[in-house]
Image (cartoon, rainbow, N blue to C red):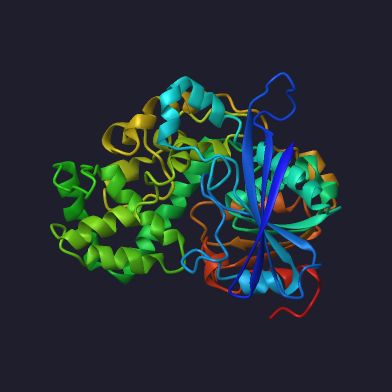
Length: 417
C-alpha cells in the first residue's frame, strides 16, 4: 500500500490530506488492480491529539464534504471538532477516491459494472481500516449518515474491535429484509408525506395534476433537453424527506411550468442527476444484502401510486430513466447488469450483537428513506447504542440541527443539550 500526505491551513483549520493506494478487490492477491482512496483529517489549533471521528457520507455515490468550502462544509463541523479530529473520507468511487464517471464507460458496460461491484460498504470498511492503521490509531469513532450508517453496520460486522463509539444518523438499515420489502414500506412513507403536504397546501394537488398531464404529454423539458417523464416529475417529492424540503416543493409548484425558473428548479429538485451517476446506477444495491434488486422500487409500486399521479415518490428508481434521462442513457447497460447481480450478504447479525457496540443513534420517525420500523429491528441488536427516536427532524437532521451534539452527549451519559 502506497500513501502520500500533505497539509493545508486555512480559516483556522489544519487539514492533513492523505491518499492511499489500495486494492480494488480486497482479499484477492491474484487481482492486481488498485485504486486511490482520499481522506482529509481536520482539526482546530490545540486539537491535534484529540481522538479521531471518521465520517461516513450518505449515498452511495457522494463524496465527503469539504471543510474549506463554505457551500459544502458540514453545519456540524464545529460540534465535531470540539472533541475530535474529523476524518472526511471520500468513499471509493467518489470525490478524489478514483471517482467513477462517464469516461469510464469507454471500457465497456460489462467492465464498469464489474468494477462497481467492488465499491460496496464492505470494501469501504477495508479502506477505512487501512486508513486507520496509516494514521496510527488503535481505535476511532465513526459517524455514519444514511448510507454511512449502513457502512457502520458493515464495520461492526467485521471489525468492531477498531471502533470506540459509533454515531448513526438516519442509517440503521435492515439487516435481512429484501429490497422489495424496503421499497414497499418507503412507498407507504411517501404516501403519508404526500397527504400531509396536500393537507397544508390543498391547492397544489390540482397544480401537480396539471404538471402530471403535461409530463404525460411530453410537454415538460429540462435545460439539458430531458423530456420529463411522469415518474421523474413525481421524484421531486423526495424533497419531503428533508427538514425544509416542503419549501423546495412549495416554491416549485408555485411557478409557471413554462418558465425558465420552473425548468431549472425542477432539475435541481429531483434526487438523481448526472453529477453522481454512481448514485443512480448503484443505489438499490445498498439494500441488497444477499439479494438481486431487479428494479425493486419499480416492481413493488402500489396500485394507488399507479392510479394517482399526485402521489410523490422518494428514492424510487425507475428502469425507464435509462431511456428518458440524457445523463443516464450511457449508463443503461451498467444499470441493467447491476440490477441482475446477486449481491453477497454484507451484514452479520450475530457479530453485530456480539460487538458490544457503544454510542448513540438518531432514528427519525417520519424517515421516508430508511424506515423507522426496520431501524428499530436493527437497534435491538445493539443495546449499548442509545436511541434517540425523534420526529423533530427528517432524514437530513444531521445537516440541519444540533443532532451530533445530542448524540455525543447521549453516548457519554452527559446532560443532553
